[in-house]
Image (cartoon, rainbow, N blue to C red):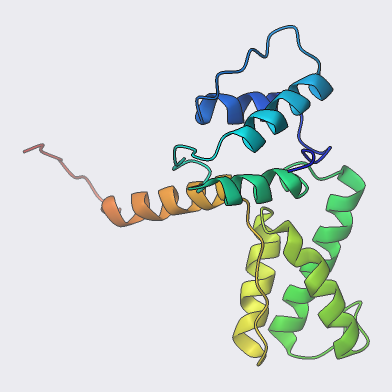
Length: 177
């Protein structure tokens, strides 16, 4: 690994150091020095303890995660553009036509969907691409950061475990067993 992507903040690197229990001192260290220390440690070490929170099981996935842009950090102007495209994809999925969307051709739709698929941490993007995959032949992969994958899996598990309470009108008395 040559370097950590610039979109990772010092706090992001500290979180990774804490999660993987990496023995680095990060107090009174600048972001660039911390980045260099972390890269050196990753290059020197072969085995990393798996992290449930980040869905990272080995060195290869850790290097891949740190070398790509941090998906959670998206600039505000870029987020607005992504949301605009995602909403137009949802509109296309609903109507199954290009009317009232910003797309004129299937090629333009394809390029825009490939662009926003890199930002799978945004819920609207995930929903737009999922809806689009239901109505077209080709399927688009959604890039989701490991941390968001963990959160989604945790929420699904909680949904399955918790029973659903249905409220109806009237007076009720509840008893605990």
